[in-house]
Image (cartoon, rainbow, N blue to C red; front, side):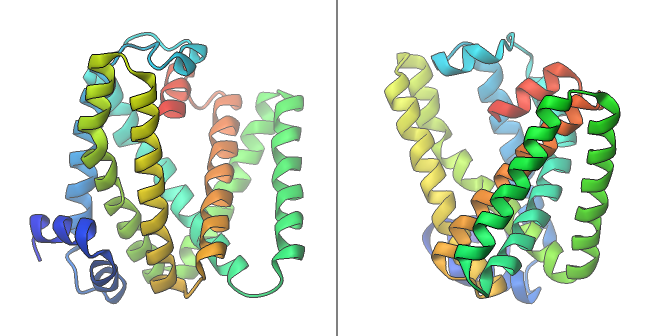
Amino acid sequence: MGFLPFSKGILTDPEPQFRKLFSGDLNPGTSVVIYIFYIFANAFFLAAKPADFPAEFAQFGLEEKSWAFYFFVEICWGTALTVAVSALMLHFLRIFRAGKLFIKIPAWTLGMLACAGTAYYAKTAPFSLLSSIGAFFFIAAIIRREQKVYWRFFQATLALNLITVVVLPLEFAAVYLRSENLFLAAEIISGLWILVLFTKLAKIFTGTSVPKAVISMGAGSIAGLILLYLLYGAGVMPKEVYKALLIL
């Protein structure tokens, strides 16, 4: 199946496309093409958009950057973070799939809060660096354990970026009209659409129910933000790259 039929299928009938990814019947390059197309389009949008729009973005203090800057950040740092977050989400899908959530959720929440709080209050590069190394060993262990399933799951998560591309014209319109409400609406549409698709692929790849898939996606995203902060705190990630990734 080529790029266009697969893309159309993701938008109109996603489950068969995810099943093809899960069974290995789809060329891995198809999802990669979607991801690269997303990077090109999103980098162009961010370069064209005023750095202080919407107003919430002004707090990051990010100056206007070139298309090449955003493309580099996304293709290098963004891809590495996607690899890590995909592994963490798959791990949480496995963890939350079975058992009692009222025990697991508080335990994992307290664990992540402890990591985030320690990283924030310690504010020392050695601690952040050691924590980052530990996190990457943990992520590598997940990928090694899951192996084939992980890489196919990763391909599926790359394909989800197609939704962002589809919604981009609405965001361009919001920038042109300087309408923060329209921009927020576009972000909500994109987020909910991706969430729905994630629950579908989670069920196919792990058999996880919708509520548990939503929780797993949230947990993986939070863990990814903690990892991002640790990399910045360790001095591994430049400040401008860190601020850019927060809005990507």
